[in-house]
Length: 452
Image (tube, rainbow, N blue to C red):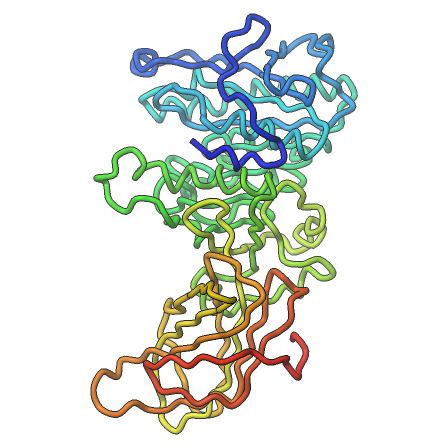
């Protein structure tokens, strides 16, 4: 369960609305029903700013008679995935409130729990096509009533991402936008594009990956694909099967929680175009010249600043790292060092930033770094917290030298550039002498050169 503070702008609301006769709730099935299997039945639960606490089931026909549904507003469909236990997703109320905070829209929660709730995953997969056909028919009725497909946004989670893709394909890719949150991998890996979510399914497709080595789908499947922590193992998630259910679902569910956090503006998840996560961690992908005058893409609801560029580029991979807990955002710096060494040294860098008594630390150790004479080295330093203003900097280069004399390393220059907070000053220091495996602390100075 997410903490109350996560809801931010939308305030505290009641998660359990009760069983008021005038409210329609998401289907809540028991284990017996999932064990014997259920017959697919698709419901549409309508939420607007006028009824955030009380969903109204929208009829597939004569839906314009529902006074809360306004065809002049944009419409967002929220499509869940596989539900082996039959319980409602814990995040439904959260995403409804957060979407309503973005814009005055019709929010339609697609309840296909009778069809997704089945111990037989293959049955749920088969039902994705039928669910898509059902929703496609409804959207075609909307279009007949004058609704522009440009104004429709499909948000699909896991199997729901492929449901969204099938809907988009049936409508000839004319849907305005599809957002896929960790599209399901089992039964969809290695299949042709028409059998899964792909960029042709909508005018704009954005995808977030968090569990590609298990329940999620590898590869690129949108105009932009966000890879959180490389798109596989997520920090804070269990690493052994002894943790029970969480071991299986934590990485996969993280996609939803990251997206909710982005909708809530609690976290700033800036992502950087790169060929791989390894290259990103190695500091090779910290420029976003392609997107000027906009900055690097940010995960979230509003992608308008980057949309035209992404459509022109085709398919773009972007990477970012997160912390293990809310608000997930890391604070990133580009570190440029020029060394003047007589002897070649290999090692990792430990960087600490000080502000009064507060200290944050990062260890840049994704690979061994090479320090040699007159060599410029660029690093990505990411901290779990933000600390400002920075009053002192500590630096240590850790090598494998455990016996014999400590060699001295001379830095002709170190420059530390904030990546997300572009308004903050660059921090420099010139001509520093340090011993390997020993920490040196210094005050940052203004830089003589420009940011680039």
